[in-house]
Image (cartoon, rainbow, N blue to C red):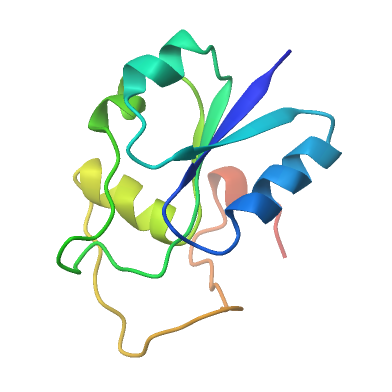
Length: 120
């Protein structure tokens, strides 16, 4: 059975994410964000979702994950803090916003290319 690992960074939505995946008839398991990559590999997960959390990668003692997960060759989706940690650990830049946000945000796509090509 295909299984997706949801790495929990302390946000309130990890269970909701896992539930939505299961509604798509794909099994999911919630794991602590510090789960070692070798355990993820050994369990044969088909993908990883890095959940959100209340912190920023700029915060002292913010949660972390094993950098080796990015070398497993499986798809990874970062949501909220999960996107920050993925960007940060892969050498990208995470800049502080002018205002803190929570909830819905507006995205302005500047170049309608790649996965954004056919979006309104």
